[in-house]
Every structure is written in structure tokens, then in C-alpha cells.
Amino acid sequence: MLKNKKTVYFCQECGYESAKWMGQCPGCKTWNTFVEETVSAKKNPSGNLKASEKRQDPVILKDISLSEDERQTTQIGELDRVLGGGIVPGSLVLVGGDPGIGKSTLLLQVCRNLAENQVAVLYISGEESLRQIKLRANRIGDFNDKMQLLCETNLEVIREVIERKKPDVVVIDSIQTMFHEDVSSAPGSVSQVRESTNILMQIAKGMGISVFIVGHVTKEGNVAGPRVLEHMVDTVLYFEGDRHASYRVLRAVKNRFGSTNEIGVFEMCNTGLEEVKNPSEYMLNGRPEDASGSVVACSMEGTRPILVEIQALVCQSNFGIPRRTAVGTDFNRVNLLMAVLEKKVGIHLGTSDAYVNIAGGMKMTEPAIDLGICLAIVSSCKDVVIPDKVMVFGEVGLSGEIRAVSMAGQRVQEAKKLGFETVMLPEVCKSSVGKPEGINLVYVSQIRDAISYIMRK
Ligand SMILES: Nc1ncnc2c1ncn2[C@@H]1O[C@H](COP(=O)(O)OP(=O)(O)OP(=O)(O)O)[C@@H](O)[C@H]1O
Ligand SMILES: [Mg+2]
Image 1 (cartoon, protein in one colour):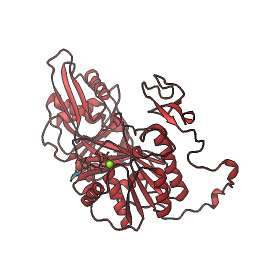
Image 2: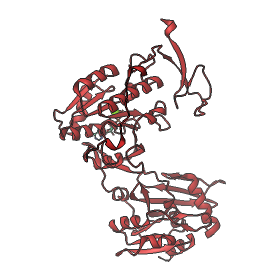
Image 3: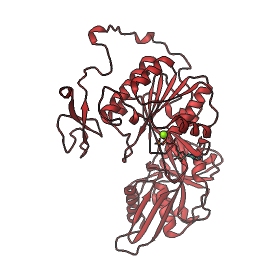
Image 4: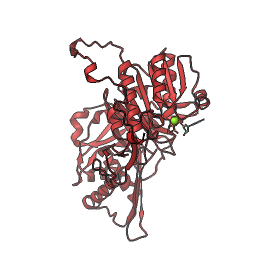
């Protein structure tokens, strides 16, 4: 018995396999990630046929037919958008996210909507009991009998149930609890996760069933288990959000059937997750009036412009080294912009503490918010109020020039829609914006011009 057992070492980060333990992984260069795992001596754990027993003929691409309504809508607009227009049959979607962010809730809501559309759904949980799922389901609403539940972690049993029940959509909550008998290491280990995903992939592609897999994330925010997991699935979605804010952002980091730029915004309510159709309005809620150090900027998330309030607080430093913090944006970028203000505009910030915050807890790193950050800092430093009907966007270069940003027209339209009266934008975007009616456009080419505009106001 012992003879058949072989142990190998796997990197928990990237799945690199090695016969001996190593301190640093040669694959991903991380330290202390090798874990010993027993692998079975069985040659063909997935039960595939040998190549000589199979006979396969290639198919002519032109002859493959696709029907019009190929994608299945989830009735949740924000999720459909992130998926690229709905669920593709036979696709494997990995949903990752922090503990308690709402992964199970979202998928249960998807199941409910699909079941209502007469799609047969099988929800397999390895983490919670049937009663616990029922409790959550009661929060969400009524389910019809197209929705079936199974509490199981053994993949061979799951495969048998799926083959017998033939559902259209399967949800696996979560991949880290699933195991296959032929792999002797513990559930959640690299070889188990890889083997389990492999089996689910065969089920999805072989039977044309769409499979949603829930994956836990590590401290760094990656899906736990090997990176290969992300390569195996068709779509990887991350569910992220601030622990203290009730909204959640769903982001695609990989999508074989759609764009990866789109985001979906949800709010956690006691009846489950609700879509936030207009994130800008939501983010700007509770903005202070007539306060210095506050300005509205615009960042593009995929094809959608989102307006956020940027806040800055600049005050005299009591220590030798001034303190700077940036919440929700890049700290180094804030330092760089402060250096530009110091050198090119002559605003003395060397002895001031500065705190920059994107209100609402959203994370934004697009350079288009540069102008907003600069103006918020100046507004706080000089104690001038920027009128609340002004929105600004533009990238700030190292010589103080305001550079072009993409999709300027859409940003202006969003500001107009939300009742803003003035938009400050880069001079170079003049031709792409045209002359929209009902909104006052202020073109600036230098950060100095932008500052003198707000000082005049
Ligand atoms: N009655 C309620 N009202 C509002 N929010 C609630 C209510 N009940 C639960 N929640 C929210 O739902 C979250 C749990 O959601 P869910 O179980 O779907 O998360 P999860 O991502 O699946 O977590 P896990 O990683 O533990 O499986 C809780 O963190 C809480 O914020
Ligand atoms: Mg869960």
C-alpha cells in the first residue's frame, strides 16, 4: 500500500510541482508556499479513455450552428453586464470574494431567477446545511420547484446526481470543500482543487451545463488554490467591497465571452443583494455643501462613467516629516501630484500633512481623477470652496499639463444627467466632446489655469 503512495510538493500560489521541498518557488518566486501532498499512483484518475480507444473527427467551423438566444439572462442586469450579456451554456464561472461578502447570496438569487424562467437549477453546498440555505433563501424570496438543493462534497456522487437529474445550471459552493476519492490530500489543497475543477469542467463542456463555482480568496485577495484554477475556467469574477460600506462591486478579471472592464454594483439589503442602477448618484449621496477640500471627479469603470467625491484635508504638520495618506487611490500618485503642485504652481506643501480620500469607499486608480485630487488639495490648503455643481476630470502630467483622457463625451453626459452645471476638462478633449447643450464646459491645458479658475469662483 505504501509503495503506491508518492508524495510531491506543490506551491500553493501557482501550483508548481516539485519532488523535493523548496524555500522559494521557481515558478512564481514566492517564499514558503510549498506543501507536501500525497498523490495517488492511479494513472488515470478522471476516468478518461485511452487515446487509442477514442475516435474523434474534426468538425468544420462553418457548420457549427448557434441559436440567437444562446445566452441565458439571470434577470440581474448588473450581473448580466459583467458576464458579457448573460450565462453562456456550458461555461464555467468562478466567483471569488472575501468571506461574508455575499457570494452565496448572489448565486442563490441567480438560482431563484433562473428557476422562475423554468431553468432547472441544482445548488450544491459543501459548507452549509440544507436548513442554513433555507434560512438565506427565506430572506431572498419564494423559490419554485425547479430549484433543487444538495449537500455533498464528494465529486463522484455529485457527478452521478448531475448525470441523473440533468440540470441546466449547477452552483458549487465552494470548490475548496470538494474532494475526489482518488486524490488523497485534504479538500482545499492544490491537487484536490485542480482535480475537482477538472471534473467540473468535463461536466460543463460535456453536458452543456453552466457551472458556477464559488472560490475563497487568500489574504492577498487571489482565489485560494493554484493559479491554474483561473486558467481552467471561462470566467473569473471577483466580488469586492468595503467591510464598512453596504455596497459591493462585482468585477470580471477574465472573461472568454465578454469584456473584462465592466463592473456591477450591488447593495446588501435584508432581502439580499440589490442592483445599484446608478452608482454615481449612490456614491455622491451625503456630500457636504459649501465645504472646502471636496470636489467631484469622474472615473470610467468599463463603459460606465462613475462620479465620485474626492476629499482632501491639508493641515500644518507638527512633526519633521509630514504625514500623507491616500484612501481609495494610489498613495504614490498623490505624492507625485503634490510634488507637481509644489514645483509647478508654487503651493507650499512641504510642511503640511495631507489626507486624501475617495468618499464612499470606492477604489479608483484611473489617471483621469488626477485633476480632482489636485483641486481638492488646493481647495483644502487655501480654504476655498469649489461650487458643488462643478465636476472635473483630466490627467495631470509632471510638467503640470492637463492631458487627454478617454471617453470625455460620456463623462460630460453623465455629469449633465446628474444635474451638474459646469465640467472642467482637458483642452485636448475639445474636438471629441463637441458642443453639448445645457452644460458649461471649462477647458484647461495647465494645472495653473484650473487652480486660478477655482480661486476666481
Ligand atoms: N438580514 C440581513 N440583512 C442584511 N444583510 C444581511 C442579512 N443577513 C446576512 N446579511 C449579509 O450577508 C452576508 C453573508 O452573505 P453570504 O453568506 O452570501 O456570504 P458569502 O460570501 O457566501 O460568505 P462565505 O464566504 O462565508 O460563504 C453577511 O456578511 C451580511 O453582510
Ligand atoms: Mg457562502
